[in-house]
Amino acid sequence: MSEVDPCDWCEEVLQPYLDRDLNETDVKKVKTHLAGCSWCEKRFKFETDLRRLVRQAAVEPMEPELKAKLAALRLEL
Amino acid sequence: MSETSPEEARRIAQGARDRVHFEEEALALADQVYRVARGVSRNKEEAEDLMQETYARAFRSWESFTPGTNLRAWLLRILTNLNIDRGRRAQRTPDQQPLEEGDYFLYNRLESTSGESDEERILERLSQDHVAEALAAVPHDFRDVLVLVDIGEFSYAEAAQILDIPIGTVMSRLHRGRRILKQQLAELAVEAG
Image 1: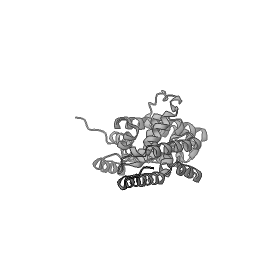
Image 2 (image 1 turned 60 degrees about the vertical axis):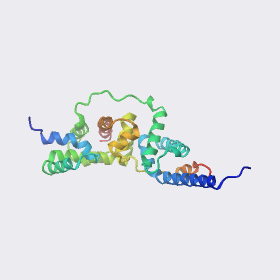
Image 3 (image 1 turned 90 degrees about the vertical axis):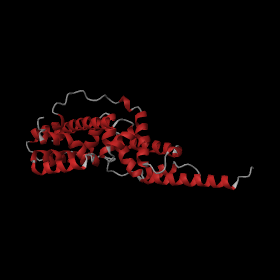
Image 4 (image 1 turned 120 degrees about the vertical axis):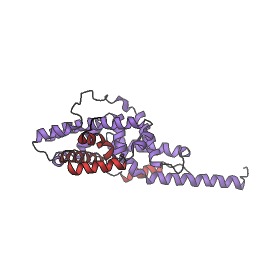
């Protein structure tokens, strides 16, 4: 069996790792690899920033008027 | 007027209390639900309409919610279903342009045009509007998953349950959705360059 390239493996688990969906053992493995690989570290940082950017697309809070409208939709007692 | 038995009266009172409790819990989650609504909608007005439809339906069908289960996921299931019903199917189909460069697409493209390798600066060029615009261009099947996982912070399993699709599909749509998003962002960043 040929050995899997650690950077290829890292790229593969990048998505579940950043989406909080990777098991603990693999998370540890990723962290160890990232500490010693600047290429993968850069890749992970970039993907992390991208996710942060997406979250920022939805930061503006709901208008108070909408909140009132939603409360008004409650059924009559 | 017929007499209501004490037992019947108690039952009615209990039901009313449960409902009020449900409504209050649902309203307390409105800010979080709105963030997802905003992420899956093209603009604020659309998000606000979607919120009202979602809450109207949730209040009407409160009895189908199982107490003790995840109310936020339940509300978002209503929201995503309504959003699909709203005819977003009219949106253009997924970009068929091959993305051989895959995940390195945005990375490579931005690096080659900016002549620098500081990713932070690359992403700094993109404003909140750019991201919203790019997200809006992602076909809804992919965008729903992306928004639930990135903005709603749901796990793959929860997103799968909300959208009623297998976990493997969540992962592949997420992957594909992010690729499309990166492609859109790359185009916008180059324009904004």
